[in-house]
Length: 256
Ligand code: WAQ
Ligand code: MG
Ligand code: MG
Ligand code: MG
Image (cartoon, rainbow, N blue to C red; front, side, top):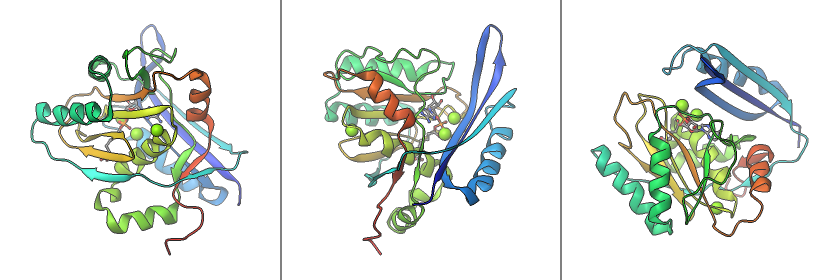
């Protein structure tokens, strides 16, 4: 296989007394050399026109991936219904309970999601105690080096209409990489973008899309990964989340 490049962007606004600033937007992909420019332009455009505001700093980084990517077959997508934030959050909490997440841990996740200052990465919390396991504070753990395999995505799009929107494509690539690791029991996510209120819960091999997880206009959101209580080496998991190249899809085009 030809070399892949990791193309990543993050944009932030300055904030007094905090060198990292306030998170505006981020994004990324794994592409071949001749596709770098197209993705870099898309990401730059995203940074410059984001509804969270004009950034003061934009980091764009492009790096050859030396390790071979792992192919991860996508989990299935289930669409849920809700008309109110209360209803949407109840759907999310019920799904997390069914997956086996403790009430403490669910409440701790909701507290994290409601914080007004959005962080650029995810919080890793214990599925039983709800305690934060990563030591990353306001930075969080930024999952990186994942993308859809293009042909596998096209195949999935034939049967799932939600996978046409750029945002759902990006979010599901991340969610699929995260769900691949056995240490991660579940994930809860909704956007920090004020205009986007649909979020998801993943667990037990399903990406549950849930509308109405927050009020429109609200700029808080985030990601929580619920981690198995018996995990010994959290740093090793974080390393794989950040560094291991993953393509979502099938290596052999068995589906053609
Ligand atoms: N790694 C870890 N956490 C991240 C990453 C990443 N690569 N990117 C974003 N986050 C965290 C961070 O705290 C953001 O503030 C938060 O997630 C939300 O990110 O099926 O668009 O990119 O329709 O604003 C979900 C539903 C959309 C998609 C989620 O999130 C669908 C979304 P955003
Ligand atoms: Mg995003
Ligand atoms: Mg898992
Ligand atoms: Mg956002």
